[in-house]
Image 1: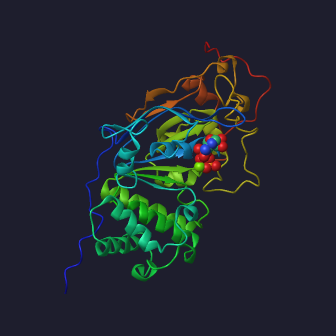
Image 2: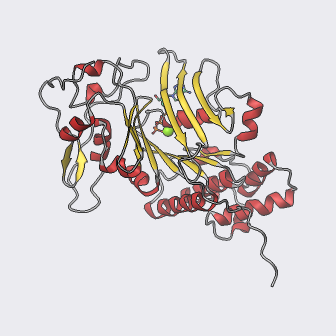
Image 3: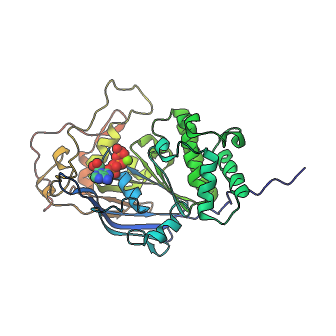
Length: 372
Ligand SMILES: Nc1ncnc2c1ncn2[C@@H]1O[C@H](COP(=O)(O)OP(=O)(O)OP(=O)(O)O)[C@@H](O)[C@H]1O
Ligand SMILES: [Mg+2]
């Protein structure tokens, strides 16, 4: 029996979270120029991503999730776009690093699975060749070795008959399989950090579960850090170690996954959780939606961006609350950007039908006594 080829995915020991972060995002801001005026897509975003940990970025459409991820790879560097703050990765600030430096990191040390898998693959190249090309762009390997690694990467993400399928074009794959091809491509250079933007949206639940299992396995086996961007709290619950909730370009709550679901402190988070069907018990006929619409990123209100939709708005909310962190009993960081003192938030938080949701907006709110 011949010796099996060495796996292309070397197993790295999982790194315990809590040490120095793999990536430290500090005060990140992204403003696009537009005919309607500046678009403040991302504001004051600070977040640590750790090796061997999945962090979920969750929030409504337009909240700035994709722009945050794209900015980390220098993909929002257009004329007219202003990026402020920093994102430190192994001593390199991804915000200010020269393009050449970023090219050496992008795809190799930090890889991204884009929100739209079909448009991210070149339709006229066979998928195996695309993955092999990505490997050769970053590593000094010959064509045959790159091809071998590409086939292995496809097999690793569960594509059957990988060596034959490597010769197929993107349109010859189903949506779920194409998503796996994207993930294979992203993982082929063994990145330390994977940015996965809605990696399972539009996939059926079985395929979604398989892809999420794959990401979790690679996190465990390689100690890879993962930032998963999603609007699906089911995906968050299944995968995330930590969760950052975005609203209007800002992080409004950040906590361990357990704390976020068990003890959410921001009224927007309650709304998000309330609009998810309960796991057990009878399904309600209609799920409560958060009334109103998110603010336009070209006309953001002063103070808390959520206040016009918040049932608990009071006088302080015209001022911008800071992302105030507390340490939980288990020693985890739990931060939220709300003027309501935590105890008061817990007291007014509406819990119904076995899950947490938003209470109906009451008549003009009283002042909760917290100074502005
Ligand atoms: N290149 C751009 N120029 C101008 N505005 C942009 C640009 N890219 C994104 N935006 C705006 O920035 C805001 C944040 O967009 P982003 O794509 O990050 O949202 P998202 O949270 O990923 O939403 P979704 O869940 O729909 O993917 C949106 O208002 C969007 O219209
Ligand atoms: Mg997006």
